[in-house]
Structures are given as C-alpha cells and as structure tokens.
Length: 586
Image 1: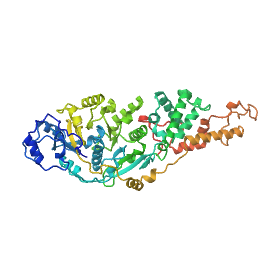
Image 2: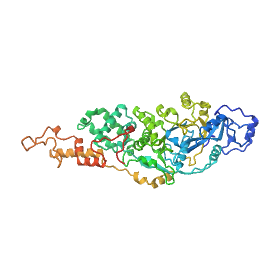
Image 3: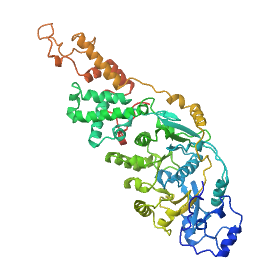
Image 4: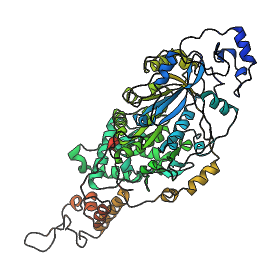
C-alpha cells in the first residue's frame, strides 16, 4: 500500500501558505523516508511543516482538535489511520470506528485502484482480532492473503511510520468457500425452496409478471409439501402445472399461463446451459457457519472465492443476498450489542442493484433496516455512492470514501452528488476527493452515541496480513483440512418433487395398463365405483378414469413419509421471510 502513485491530499482543509524556497531546500536535504518522499513530483509532496522543529509533531489547530475529539472514543474501536490536514499526516489525530457501531452498516466507495480492497482487509483483520466473525466476498481473488502474515517492505514501513502504527505481520483464521464448488473452496449450495422466488427471479432475469407467476408456483409447492431441492424439481412442477392434469390446480389462485410457464422453463434451460446447476442442491449450506469464532478467540473470516464465477455477476451477487437473507431468517433479535455477531462485506455491490425488480429492492431495504437488531453489520463496497439506492444508502452510518475521478461530465455529476451526502465540513470535498492518494479516504462514522463524527481526510493504516492472494495449492490444502469439507464437499440427491412426480406418473401409467383396480389399501379409483345394487363396476369416460398426478402423490404412503421426514404436515405452507426465502432442511 502506497500513496506514491497518486497526489497526496495536499488540498485538505484551508489552503496552506506556500513554503519558501529555503524551506523546500531544507526539506530536500533531510534523509528521505522509505517511500522516497524526495523522489515525488514537487506538486505532490506534503506541504512543509513550517517553523516547527524537524521531527516534532506539528501543533494541532483548533479545527484539527475539533475533528480529532470526534474520534476519541473511550470504548473498543477499530483504528483506521491518521488525520490529513493541510497536506500533512497528523499521527496524534487518530481516526477510529467504535466497535459497537459496526452493526449500523457502512459504505466503502472509490474509483478502481484507490485501495478499497485493502480497506476491507484492514477492517476485517481488526474485527477478527476483537472476536467478531467476518464475511468477505473475494471477487477478484486477492483477499485470500488475509489468512497469511504480511510481508514487510519499505512501503509498509513508511506507511506505518506516517500513521504511527505498530505494524506486526499476522495471518487470521479463515474458511474458504466457493459457489457450487466452482473454484477453490468448500462448496456452498442452496435448495431452490430456500432460495425463494424473488431471488430466483433475479437470477433468471424474469420480469414482474413472470416473477409473480414463479411466486405462485412456489406457493403451490409449499402447500403440497413438494420439496424443490434442485432445478429439475422446479422444472417438474412447472411442467405438471401446465399439463392437462395440473392446470386445474392453480385456477382458484390465479392460474399459470402456458406462455409464462414457457418463459420460465426456457430461462431455466438457459441457466443450466451456462453451468449453473451445481449451485442448487444438497447438502445446503448452513449460514450459522459464518458466525464461528476460532479456538483462540479471534473471529473466523469466511472468504467466498468468486474468481471462477466472475462472468456470472447476477448469480453471485444474488447468492450473497441469499446468505444474508438466510441469516436474517434464522437469527433472533438481540438489540444493540457491545460488538456485532457478524460483519458482512458486500463487494461489487452495484451488481446486486442492477436490473433489480421493485420487490427485490424493497426486500434489500427491509433487510438492511432490520438486520441491525440481530447483531449483523453490512458494508456495501462499490465505486460511487450512487450505485446504492437512496433508501439503502440512508441506512449506512459509516462511510469510507476513497478517491473519485472526474474525467467526464458523468464523473463530475457523480462527484458533486457524493459531496452532498457528507455532513458539512471545513474541507473542500470536491477538491479533496479528486486529490486523495492510494490508501487515503474521507471518513465519517457514527460515534458511540449514534451521532455522525466530523468529516476527516485520513491516511489509512497498512493491513498486517498478506496484501495479495495466497498460492492456490496452499488454499486447496486449507480447504481440505477444514472440518467443514467432509460435510459439504459431495453433493447428494435425495428424493424430492422431481422423483415424486415421476413416481406418481409411473403409478398412473401402471394403473391404466392394469385396468382400474386400486392398490391394496387405497381408495377406489374413479371408474371403479360399484353400481348401486350391484357388485360389478362400470367404467367412466376415458378422461375421467385416473386421478390427477398430484392427487396420487398426496395420497401415497411415500408422500406421507416424506412429509413426516420434513417435520411438517401435509397442507402446511412453508413460512417465508424477506425475499421469500425459507428453510426446509439442513
């Protein structure tokens, strides 16, 4: 991490008076710091400290003292870095986030290459060190280094010296996951039933009408106890509901048009053709795994490795939301805690909101608003705040804004909009946000009393873990040695809706071949009803001879056994939560 590649925040705060040529010459004669201070372009060097003694900490002005006092929290806190003012880094003015405020959510934003990923790493390390589990989505494959100690070099030493950081290399306890086992990590799967219709509609890119129809299909499967484990289960139910036997099943609650069913089936086919099937199935991932603390008391960092599915942003962003919605569904209300149960970093979050339906956005807003009281903090990570809907942005109390670019009219518009989202401050934020260097950010957080802190341009600390990926062989070895590997590695295919409907269809065909004789112990079939006053049977019309497939499924002993194994009763509807998610079996 270094700021030598971009201009320093030399414009932060009121404009500093120009340094005299003699002062600059004197500064140049000093021994250069390890990040080659003297080699920077003159315009990018910090403003000379003036008449204060060399090596002494500059005196803090009243404005600086006011900002610094806003971050002097008495309780546990995470250390972000040191204040930047008049182009100088002031290590006496430390910028921090209270640990208890991490469940008030946050935003880490900034242009590509400004240090967002390192900020995630820095915050995750300190959360883990204080016993808070963390979830990180590793989209680019460069976060796995948090499991290994960092490597000291000139840049690290320079940054640590500037912000008065006692830098010690350290790795942190990690579990590595991969969606459907694609990539390096323990496979993460979800059943179609628990994923729910709202999230699945986003993955399949369905419109509002098609989403409502899919919700109707889920509602029917829930009521009838038809478990949708994987995509073939969903296809079987859709096919049945558009068949001659199944059309009448949904008439009372709106019906399912053949055209809409066709769109859903085609979307499922295209989805599977892209290799998406492995993400749905069993064993389903238990999101309580994300809440674990290591034996030494440090929080476990759960890293979801996504490089193998980088080209499937709709899928992985929606799966991240499923993880969050599942936690919301399962966790009890706890109110405000001394420290969060989990902090969830949602990297590349603009992918989550793109092309989202109104129902989807409403569900995100509700989740963000309510999950705080369950002890979970969410940090959205993206390029500009405008990537996050206003209703969601309003719920984010902690802000770390890295540099923004202003090369185009759209960039200028985004910059002005970003500045308006900050509290009033003595900084010229339009100028500061375009002048920040790599590893520098404008910060405002919530104090322990819940009030916003003063805006502070900050030079951030260096992460203590490896700033880059670990070797793939090392990562694979860590995955194989995890106790979770045996639990989730191999996919299983239990009997579910697809198998039940196929079995019922086969039974119906066998019954037709054998005539109308009912199975032993079953009720007489239509057409086998004895005539009044006579012992013989009279066949009805051909189209009335057999019960519907669902009637056979519902009446079978196999189906009743399935219902008992699920711990439910036939006809009891699944309770669904935000996003229509549900938990049927672990």
